[in-house]
Image 1 (cartoon, one colour):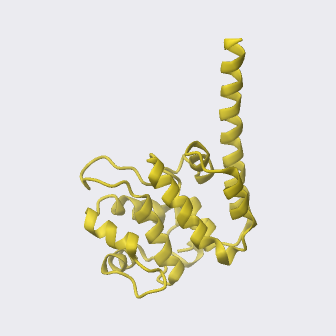
Image 2 (tube, rainbow, N blue to C red):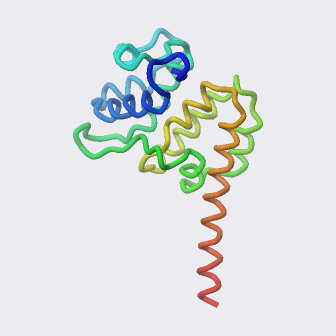
Length: 176
């Protein structure tokens, strides 16, 4: 992963990886959630890495850990949604009530320091019970220092915030 180093696009890789991760049993997901990205990696990580031709550096391990954190808990045979290409990360964060100040702090971080904050974002979404998020957005923010990915995060967050505010204003106008 990134796409220029891969036979398939980043989006396809993330989609297939997410499809496999929701099928993992709770023990496998727990091991991936606890996995140290600076360590040697879990067996479950290595199976996924080989199967999906993933990066095997610390960012690759962190990415799988982030997806494990975001994977809804419960029966692997139940309906669980991890990746939704139509729900940008910024929008998901906004609707989950992620504080604007935290988003702005993330945007101000140097690329090399994003991992820890992306993990906090993943934990926030998991705690709020998200119903899918565009995991490709997470991969791009983690793997690429291209500013366009940060701009997309901000744009989708603020579009969702504006949309929510417009709905609130409309309801207040109707009540008056």
